[in-house]
Length: 182
Image (cartoon, rainbow, N blue to C red; front, side):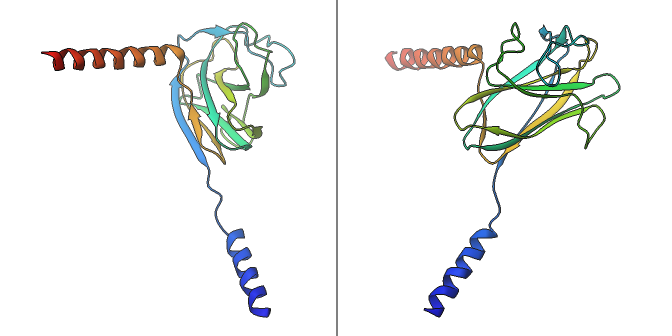
């Protein structure tokens, strides 16, 4: 009995020491010249008076595990671009307060012009959109961003990208079929 207990205790302790694996989706972009919208305030309860026409970049994604996820964006040139980030369950720039989950202007634990959301609970299989834009209308430019958490984070391609890829595969299939008939 004592040996079984010691074996069970050792197994439990070794499992407790296993690292927690997760995923990080790193990406970069540039909001210069992209479409604009009137971004929400940080709490998401009203529209901004400073960001009435901010250029935005939207990254749509899903996660494989329920859990808490972290989001961050940092401008490549913080002297010209003060980032602002939002998370949506579904993003519609013509209704910026709809489906709003969270937002952040400045990351208090990092760069002055970086933005971060930490510990946001997400559900597996749902689609979310991470929006990167500027604090004010004149804040735009290149940035690096990431999403991290316990599950696999998978970007969701834009419908136009899916249509282009489908058309390309169809074209290759037709070409192969025509060559096979010759």
